[in-house]
Image (cartoon, rainbow, N blue to C red):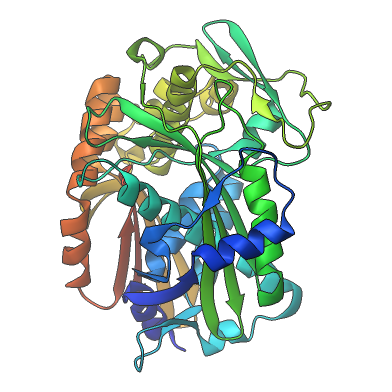
Length: 432
């Protein structure tokens, strides 16, 4: 597979087979030891398959695993991972199914397991978007906030809001990501909280037990004393096939309004601080202790916005929204207003103008240029406006996303594009 074929593969819509039905629920229930009230159900919108472009999954992988803003060493590793996986896929012209390319099939053993786990994150986040969109009470597009990595929250120990320390407690199992999604039937300020556990494997025989563990992990997190609804996904990249298994954990689905006073920029009232981590919690009793959901929404939004600003390479905007623990890392970064040359580049995409970072990776006489950035209206709001303007800009971008997806398919085959509802944009192009 040459680079042109690889770029064409990730920009082409393909079908990924999957399973989310009563048979899978029965299999998973037999493998799991779930507490009373732990209800696992199929996900109707993804019961047999989904249609996607691989670039969409790679984009979600990059967003979910993105480091703190301006962590240059980690940024280089993340971009290299994108370049590596872009040649992993191909679309079978006979049936339209997404398959592992001949190049991808050469990745075996331990490397293949690592690839499967990484791709499990990208596919898991994308499936979660489809799940939440299908379950939304309005056909309008939702804004899914940047997934919050619970491992990172646990490592920092606690959330601190307005001087109040909120302990993070965990047992031996907890889900990967906290998802905060806007309710499109309400104002851009209204959100629901969910959880996501992503698994990935190259061995189909362990997909069901893996999914059983995943659903158990979903039930191990409580917010406001309630168990949020969640999605467990196992992505299987075995042989030349890519498939998934997915189930929903029924839970609390209350609506919460983002508190504007906790979202005010340039404040140091919100952040992650080091504190003890409770280790005496039972495996199915982990929770963000006494954490009001509105505060959790505000924390997730602030972290997401700081990371988006970092994606746009805008240190000033990142400082405005960054949690306390990140501010020291950003203090020494140059201000984008101090010199014109330091302004991040603007790139035209099918999703509109975007601001971000462009990285060129050479392969012999050809090169891949990876651009990752943020829609210009959103980064403008992050740079100069208040939280209401940011939420409105993101809601507008999310509502226009479907039409712009179709527009991106009409563009040249030497470029692959993807975007997520929060305004992050990926572009991969080929040049000689």
